[in-house]
Amino acid sequence: MSESFEELEERYRAALNRVTEANRVLREVMGDPKPLALGEELPELTRAQRAAQNEAMKAWQEYVPLRDLYWATRWGREGNPPKS
Image (cartoon, rainbow, N blue to C red):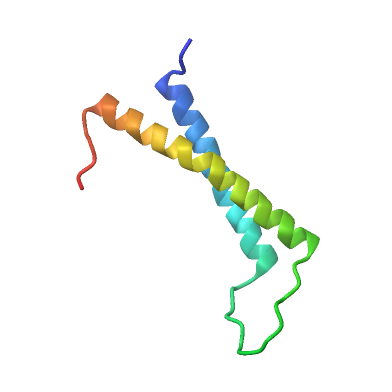
């Protein structure tokens, strides 16, 4: 049995929300990015920072294929292909 468009859209929205939340947490934990000055030591990453980076990466890895599948399916359903 194949997935309905509504089920795919629900999974897509959940993945998008996960990416949004993971990136919000990452920004909170990491703070504003700042360039390193010449000769400055690399900052150490805390366990919380590494966990936030890992979650953000995993969220994106799940989201990207779902995004592509969702929009390919939606464009096919609506007969409205993207304009390049």
